[in-house]
Length: 274
Image (cartoon, rainbow, N blue to C red; front, side):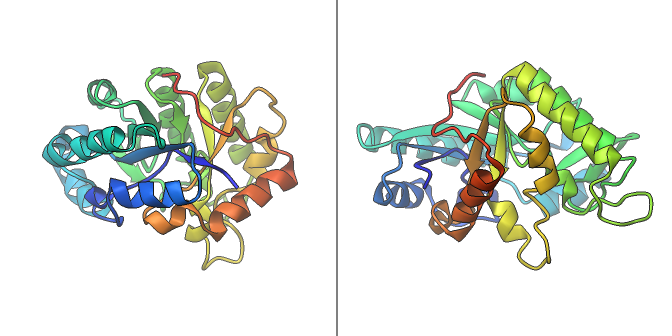
């Protein structure tokens, strides 16, 4: 069982449960060494058109900048002090990458211990598309570009759920199939992670998100079989917890078993590099 997690969400993102202490209590109960609290960073109107912000802002449901600065970060910092000597607490944000957002990532990076890069949406032909519903054999290259460009900034420590593109991928026949486009994109993402010294996350919450599907949507076996070919890549398992109780749950155990089955080397703890 893992004893560290670097992908945890609090109530402030508006689609999760619990405060910092709720997560820390679970972590201490299960002898965690480290806990990273990494709620979704605010989504700013300047990242996209007003119509797109109206649409994505409602669906993404993240905190405002005011909430981030006045509630979220102070809560995590207070928890660091209170539990010093019992568990190492790290502050973080999970944040998107757009060509217009790097300044904001640099601003937030100065306020936390690390950043997670999560590509839930991406730019394609002057539009913002949704990674959960708008990836096909053409748009997958724009997803790849967002992931690669983000990693190359040197701001992000981990690319979380790197295989999220397989959630609803459609090939040229409108089928969900890991094809040559997926293979190419996967290799480029893996190779860039190695080049930029960025961790790849095996996301346990993807198992939860796949519970109504006959197969896992992510983690995607074909993606991680490719990862196995690269011995230099660094991998961590992330709970992507949206509820304190999911820090330790069946999905984590299944992710560990999956990694063991494939022979993936999982890091016990994550080093903050960026």
